[in-house]
Structure formats: C-alpha cells, structure tokens
Length: 238
Length: 157
Figure 1 (tube, rainbow over the protein chains, first blue to last red):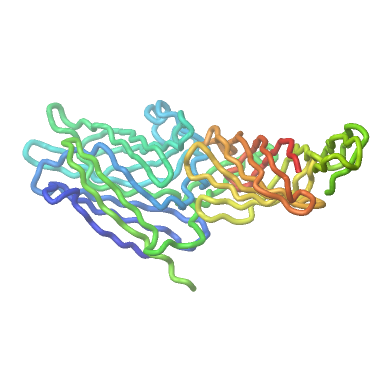
Figure 2: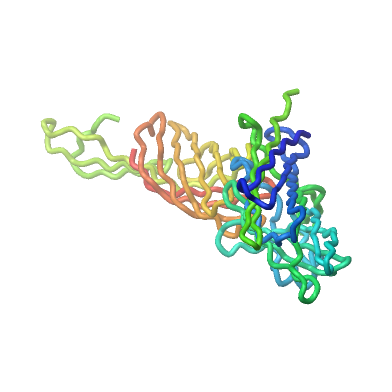
C-alpha cells in the first residue's frame, strides 16, 4: 500500500492549506479494490471557515461507474428520517469518519463524526451519492452531504452545519471516506433472497506513468480555496 | 460480388437475413453496377463477462437472430449518462464491426438499460463493404458485468 501526498496551498497568501491521501486496498491492476480518500484542512490560528464543498479529481479510467456498488438508491428523505439503516442495503457504498470543529465561546472543540456513503437517486443520468454524517457529542446532529459523480470528478457539496445558537457553523477539518469494503448486498435467486458481497471498484489493467493521480480543491464559506494532490504509486510487479 | 445483369428487379431473401436488390440491365452493354445487398440485422446477444479494465468491460457471447454468430463487445461506462460500445459479430461468411453510443437510464438500478444508435465501422469476408447505421438497445447487469445487447438495422453491403 503506497501513498504519495503533495500539499499545495491555494495561493501564496492562502490562509488554509490542505493535505490529501488516496489508498487502494488491495493494489492489483485489473482487479477490484476499495478506494479510500483522506482530506485534512489546516486553518491554524484562525477561526476555521466552514467547508462548503470538495471537488475531487480521480483517474478517469478508474472503474467507479462500472463498479457493482450502489445498485439501489436511497431517497434522501428516507435517509434523513431513518438514517442509513433505513436505506436499502444495496444502496450502501462505503463509510468513513470526519473531524469537525465547533466553537464553544472562545474554545474550539473537536468532534468525531461517523460517515456513511450511499447511492442516491439520479435525476439527470449521472451517479449521485449521499454522505450521511452523524455526530453525537458534544453536538448531536445528522447531516446529509450530496455528491455527483462525473467522469474523473466527484463534486461533494457540504451544507452549512449549525451548532449552538448564535455560534458559527461547524467546520469540517478532516474527512476519511472508503468506497467499497465489507458490504453485504442481497439479490433474488430462484425466488430466494441471497446475500453477497460486492467486489468494489475496478482498477485498470495498466498503471499510468507517475501512478494514479488524485487532486482535490476545498471550497470554504469565506471564499477561500485550498488544493492538494496525491498519487497512488503503481503496484510492483510480482 | 460481381454485378449480375438481371431482366427485372429482383429481391432475394437469404437465410441470414440478407436481402439482394439488384437493378435491371437491358443488355450487356449497360453500365455495370454493384448489386445493392442489404443485411437486415435484428440480433440479440446475451454476453458474459470476460475481463475489465477500470471503466471498460469486455464481454462475449452468442448472438441470435438474423445474423447469428459470436459477439465481442468493449463496453465503456465512465459515469456520464452516455455509454459507448464497440462490438464485432463473427458470423458465417464474415464479420461486422460497429460502434455505438447510448443513453443509460436508472444508473443506480442493478440492471440499467440503454438505448442509442450504432454505426458500422467495417466488415470482413462477404461483408467487407458493409456500411450503414442502426439502433442499439441493451441492459448492463452491474452484479455480473454481463450485457444483453440488441442491434437493429438494415445494412447495405
């Protein structure tokens, strides 16, 4: 498992910097894998501006669309009312966690939030994903982020997340998402409901020069942007 | 096939769905022309997964219908609503190759369907001069990476 990470500020006077990582598990060309992304936003010494979106560029020949993940859609209203457990099992695509910062007076308190990644309805022919975030302490909140999968590009929209009355919005500072993993789906075979495990995202049979390159741009509520790049090195030939 | 002077317009339906339409020539001194033969394709292929590479899936299987044979398909789905495919049908007497694009519906369904158009890109054997276009229908089975593909068209060769 090899990860390369390069961190770039959005500009010379950028207040925010970002890091990202990307991992394939396992790393076998031409075979299915899980894809994990990690983001970290650093706004040290400042009141952190809330994250409003992430534009993730991924290798366009990665088989995200052809994967067997998300073969059912979870209606957002159902997700909001019942949580991920209320969604069809076949709509679950992965999971993760995030760290958010909440202002309590002059203090910034960190909270770890669990994430669930689900397939959402497609109103326009593109694949849509829902990222369900649940935080419990010190602020209990459920938030649904939406994402649209385009060729080589995943656009995640993060809604404003309210915290305490009159306090600033919650700021997302870290996010880790895994697409795939140990998921259980169901299909009807000869009239019986049979469980199976989806295989995940297909890696291309060849590795591009320089590895599989990822890039992310983080959009902040104050208009700032931060960018980062990462590459998964080509697997060694056995 | 060399031109065949015929005394009248002839239409011959072949077992493989080909139709021969040849113009009449009054005498051997008339201008020579190729007979306009048409392959009337209405085929369905139930294809199984062979291999994949990222966004590209390669399937093969039998095609049944008016031009029966063996089909090899390269299916490309990259997240855009439009999918594309390149395929070749190997029948008796030659092969026919085509490319197509189609609009995928319900991408989060276990088996999204698609509908679009295809264009012939070449052929071999008796179909070496085949050309034309037609319609393409299909279903992509996301669990198994299998495809069901229907090709419909009247293709001069």
